[in-house]
Length: 122
Image (cartoon, rainbow, N blue to C red; front, top):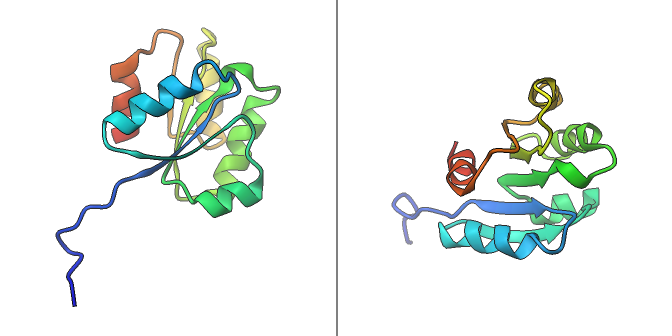
């Protein structure tokens, strides 16, 4: 029998990105640092969330019709997942609202690649 005590499993990441242009960049960046990107979707259904069982969800809230509702639904369907939200809004209240409905990390319009990597590792 093999022991799994020393084996490290890679975190499973789901990217919710409505803009097809940016999705490959996010997926490549996240995979390059050692995470498993298990899906990229513009608006995954509950069944997809349950099937993929991501440890981390990266959500671009900038192009969603109801981003706070989406964060709340993700938290309800994936209570143990780490939710990282990119919000290109400069409104200082938005991060507080997003965290209030379930986001773990909210990155703002000045976020860059190191911020994304830090948010994933948090």
